[in-house]
Length: 262
Image 1 (cartoon, rainbow, N blue to C red):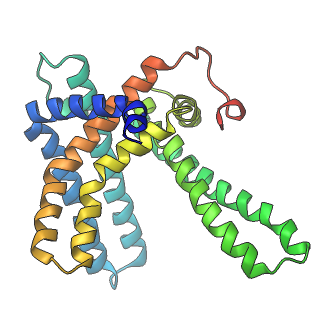
Image 2: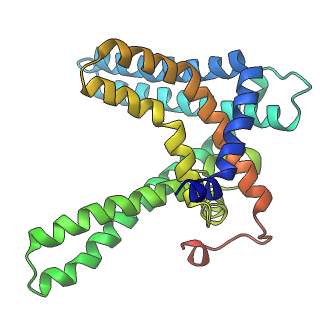
């Protein structure tokens, strides 16, 4: 089992090591962008609380503005990390990493495609279960099988197409093309990506575990460590993982969906 783990995660180890080196050298700039995302996320919640009884449309407008601002900072973070990977010798200001209006629009449209893909996969799994219901099998039994299968299918789909922002920022691709390239480059890399996410999410799971066994102080410090160390490290690690998958990708023409599903 240990040998298999070494075989299947050698790229993960390399990604984590390089991500740690990049994060350590540029911690404050990366952490600043992550902190801005944290502030934006929490400020939107506070704004929604104070405006909930004022105006429904104003609440929706402010929510959209905060979401747009959050995504802009997120894309800026990825652009900044790309700069560190490509040309770390020369400094770059955070302002210069702000994505273009076209890239932001493409990201928003691609996000809609992303959500539709997730919902589509779940609907397909549910539809596949309908013949078993018509065959006379108890609907509760079918549901008990279809729902977990649907959730697993959603999780796999989420991992396979979640790299689309990198293609928009790095390759300036369109919304649908970025989804297709994400699907193509993650083909054969699902296990490595899953292991990478498992390693990066281990501190968060530890925080939940300590909270569950009612160790609030330990849970608090674990959460602080996760917020100030793991989140910046995760952003760098995922960007490096994208670069490594692209370096191994052999396709030239724009990939199709059918041949890259499995």
